[in-house]
Length: 116
Image 1 (cartoon, rainbow, N blue to C red):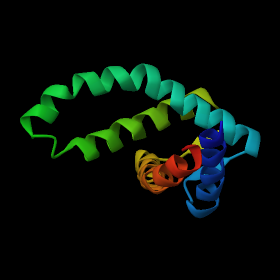
Image 2 (tube, rainbow, N blue to C red):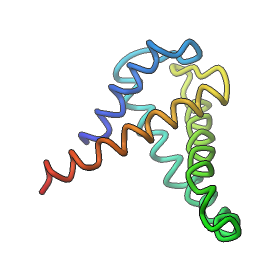
Image 3 (cartoon, helix red, strand yellow):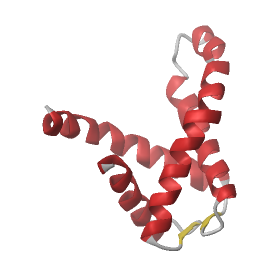
């Protein structure tokens, strides 16, 4: 629950910083984060499974880029499910995925210290 709220707060911050992103309310941000998580859990899992041969061929050198593209696609899918979130382009979704991914990297050690 803390991760969902943290991502929703980040999403609201990104909505103020990125010109191609509009979020109607904090409740919408929470629902959008849940929708992206659901899309990653269902459609994203299938896409990651399909990319296993590409990761093997490139010795996982493109793994980070592939993950960003898949996460961006899931953000676009979740955007199509919700009318109260507007994302103008795939590149806006890609930038959102990059920011969320990098902040998750910083958040993981803090979370481990807090939970342990």
